Image (cartoon, rainbow, N blue to C red; front, side, top):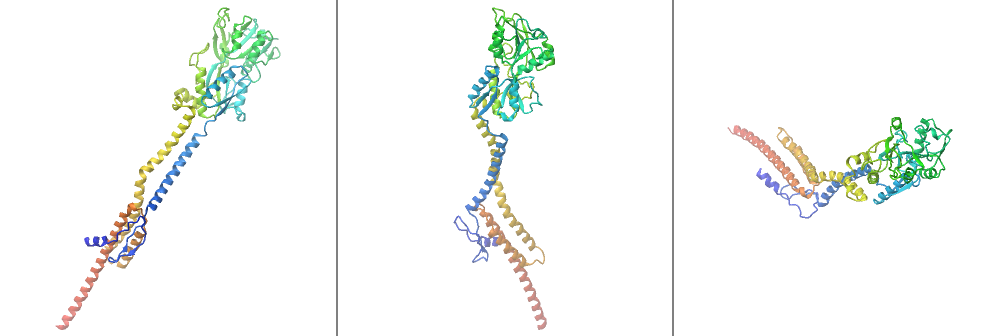
Length: 490
């Protein structure tokens, strides 16, 4: 064995050049071919290149998947449909506009006749409108399947003002009178017509006028009309004027519970006595009012980041207390006519996103996207970087292992009785040629040296076995010849 190893060690040393050529040349003394390795830094780098190319492709696919999942960046321009000039929706819309401007969002306001017009625009995908206000009782999920609510934002009392005592619980005094019920497209008009129809009042007995709240208030104060219905907040200037005026009566709804039972979207409120003018005690007694709640409504496909901005603005604008609501009562997670947006539910449960509480809006958008992109990148890159050396080492050693499998097969064949020496030598030659042509990085050169040493070891054993078999046969022939001669001599 030691002799075989010594013979194998006679392999010619590999050149020190960084590029080694894959050629097998005969050795001068050992009868072996010169063992040279075809390997270089270029070969190693090429293998690494393919490994990282696959890793890069996986990372790009992951990034593309994340980007598609995140969708486009938030728009810089958002269109809100509001209400008539000077109305609650118009004034509140301006507050939203100022707040969103701080975050670099241009909120463009589009005046309308009121809640009905707002819903019509929101339901029309071609209108360009993506957010607006509407009172409860004007739509439902079937009619507005593409819309969602960000919650209720305020009570909108249904006011009935008249000159003198024209009111009454059944509106009988309004027959033959001029009554403003709001313009076409406004929510007040829809609600007023429902009330009148339930009390047997229609256009055949009463003249309905399409005046805005501001127009109706001025006309009522000047005696140009007899009564006015309007849906607006206590903070409205026209409401304050009419409540404080001694010539105007704020009509109470004594059957408010009946209306509330028939229209579940209504709420019962109380206007305290003297709240309009304590000195003049206006109104002279408590007034029972009915009030739907106004909701902030968006299209279902509105970008989540814009929804969070609108919700933060709503919390800033509507959370202050007033005569009909407590501090922090609005905005509220109340789905009235439409389902609550998924992002609105998260907002009311957990508050605004963590980063959005401390960082500017656009920095949050870019930072959150970067973090989400880094997750799959790190998830793919780290295992590749961690396990790629082991995988590469296994792949290279597997190529050497194939040579050893063939060498073991030849060695087992030598132990078989009656084996063909010529066939074994031919197989060893082919195996040695494969080893010579094997391309490996320089770092694994020792493996090729080892396999060549072991090939030469088997070759030496094969040669020794063949010589021993030939010597035995010659000795036997000599013995026969010698025996024959002896017998002849004898």
